[in-house]
Image 1: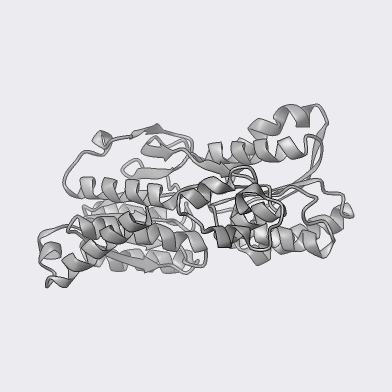
Image 2 (image 1 turned 90 degrees about the vertical axis):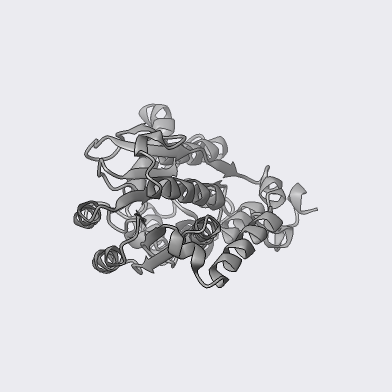
Amino acid sequence: MKNIVKAVMLGALAATAMGGVANAAGKTIAVSWKTFQEERWKGDEATIKAVVEAAGDKYISSDAQGSAQKQAADIEGLIAQKPDVIMVVAFDADAILPSIKKISDAGIKSIAYDVQFEDPNALYITFDNVGVGRIMAKEVLKVKPEGNYAFIKGDKGDPNATFLFQGQLEVLKAQMDAGKIKNVCETFTDGWKPDNAQKNMEQCLTSTKNKVDAVLSENDGMASGVVAALKAQGMAGTVPVSGQDGDLAAINRVALGTQTVSVWKDTAQLGKAAANAAIALADGTAIDKIPGVAKFNGGKKKVEMNAILLAPTPITKDNIGDAIKAGHITKEQACAGVKDNAACK
């Protein structure tokens, strides 16, 4: 797998080195990233850039650095460069809508990449985030079928935080209705930032006098903050914790036993699907004719969109070897400090 990716990237670099001839004849695909503070977005970009450039097209991008205001300005700058398609990873799904209208008014196609903004003209490409929430809850429920649950949700302005919570509640509803599971803490986390998640978890532990039996954290970065808060109270490894994104540090925590599950949304799979869709749109393919597209209206405003929803993979202590075999993480990275996991022997 690594050799294939390397070959694709080398091919893309070679095309760029040839005086820009391929780019001049091709299309331009732009991406407005919400932030590069999280590990996963760099992997997404590497895949998208490689696929776009290997097709002879041009890739341009901007980093909003976790600011809705900067992202709006970034998109205006991208529009000025007259790309054929702009992918947007929205920092704030509502605040971004005027910028998406500007993209459409300029005759440019738009893609909501991983984070939904509700615009009927855009293509939404992501993993099934309600499904991700279900997986998180199922894996934690296996370990802790009863007790006090804390919900450390993502940023309030990101609809994925709500989709994930929706999936979690679907799985836990019967146990909650029966009084076997109690929601003792529920909070959004500004910017999905680990330090904010740690503060939220610390406040939860204080308010419950450490009577927390399980934590549903909505991503791996926040899970690191949650585990740090638990560790300070001597509770890390005894309280199941969820996460998602397949961060390398998170997979190591899964192997160590301080995190129960990381739902791996293979960025190579998502990035490739998005890049190919962007190229197809740039070449004039109708949005509803792109392979894998189906109707989706699961957002806050129930706006019907064309969407591609990919299936995620849970990584637990029992299948860490699959992530190693796939080349997503090395055995050394996954197994650092681990003594009792079969994949690490």
